[in-house]
Image 1 (cartoon, one colour):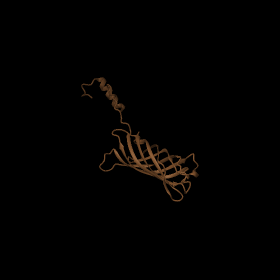
Image 2 (cartoon, one colour):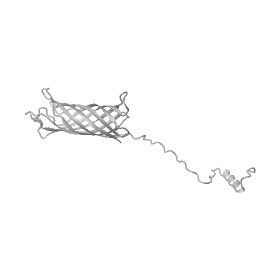
Image 3 (cartoon, helix red, strand yellow):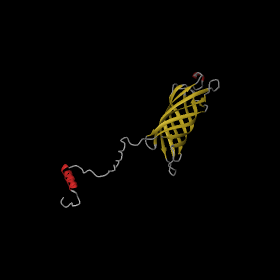
Image 4 (cartoon, rainbow, N blue to C red):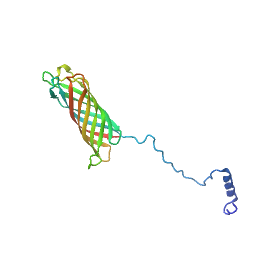
Length: 217
């Protein structure tokens, strides 16, 4: 301490008191606080959620009790799906669609039947080799509940479709992501086949085309 000629007696005294206290010397002037980086969330990043609105056509094909195959009328209606991402390339979805088509009666006439479908399943989005990463090959698979209803009694139809039925569903299509946005456009061929039915004479399957948009949040 004797060699610290530039120090005043007051500064030497304060320094000695600091050494005896074992504390930290109080810096003179203003000290700028350095913000600490926030700790990463334990839950990890939020996985994307999407909503899809589309128009879909649907053509049921019925199989009567005598094994006769009949292509019924084609219906057109909206389809609304919502879902999320399990992985980047694997998504899950559920939703509802509806339309009306004409079903043949025993007297040859074809009144309208209302068709409500509640699908749920998974879709795989693959980037084909040699294509941009904003285009995907879509593969869909799942199951659906169908409800058929009409003001005409079911017994008057050649192939009575009435009430709730269950199907397995599958589809294949293509999807384009609009550049630098959360919007995508897709087109798919989708089909279904009955697995749960109320009567052996009410067998059916169907094929349709879907064109719609998707927004990812």
